[in-house]
Image 1 (cartoon, rainbow, N blue to C red):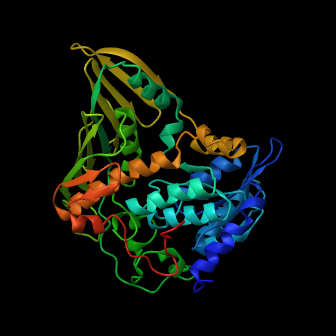
Image 2 (cartoon, rainbow, N blue to C red; image 1 turned 120 degrees about the vertical axis):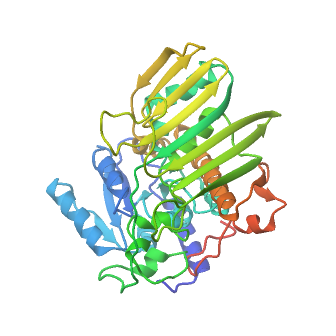
Length: 436
């Protein structure tokens, strides 16, 4: 299967589209396969197994020890044992599965999502939905072409308080919003250095590597620490940060920037991490002739809290994760995806506030059943726009210069070297198709 012809595979996937069960009736159970279960995938499993109208039909992971651990946990809870797969392509051949829920490393997200759409499956894809801007747009186009429900894993879009906060910004609670800030201050220790070693037993490393370049196995290129390697992850701005980037853009009421500049570095530690652990990015938007700014900050170690965000008693390792919005009449602070507070006027008097969460997975299932993209709280188009900001920031950081961007064409302007970084070389047969 690994050496299969990609064209024939894609053609084979598209064929069962009309016969898919995805348009489930009101009394039918939606059968979901979770793909990737070492980290965030555990949250996917928990959410789906707690929904009465959903069946966890299959689990897929390239690490047999992870599969075994999840099956043991499900058995202890009395959950019906799902089918198990190692290869995502085998999951997509299973016509009884209605939807796939992707929680793999970032470099797989878009390709799995596109394959899922071509196979007639609805798709929940973890954030960021892409490893680079070009493949994210390909996933958006695949969702449209195959009429699939595709939800992006920016969970805060389904939190009741966050949705209320965004509406209040639109209604002018703090006046004319001209600037937003995303804060991603997370306590991150060094990952050290890991030696090259044989691939652990039970790990299908070829499938794990997928579209990325094949490199020798190390522990810092595998579970979780792949986030800090450019071949697989996007640094903390694309890990925890994509949540705040999405909210910062949403609250500012913008889509794509005209100019981006980012700088930072890998401070304090001497280890295998390639991505920056301290980073600042500034985005300038000019939509409708009106300039707005989005500023994003990543910090990895000692830091202060801001506007009360992250204050949780005396915990020495507490994080500061959230967003700030500045307007002509005050400012708003959003903390932990589920709560917001406003401060109005020069005296910064307390204004409206609320704290209440929600389930992005439940919203996805609702849309799967209704077949209405409009029911999605985090549609893939919005996920792609926010992920593009992450990628543009990283391109600017890696090149050490500002980049100009055309929002209409989604292309970098006047910089050939930067333009090449809008996509990547894919390792056959795991190739994101140029024509979905």
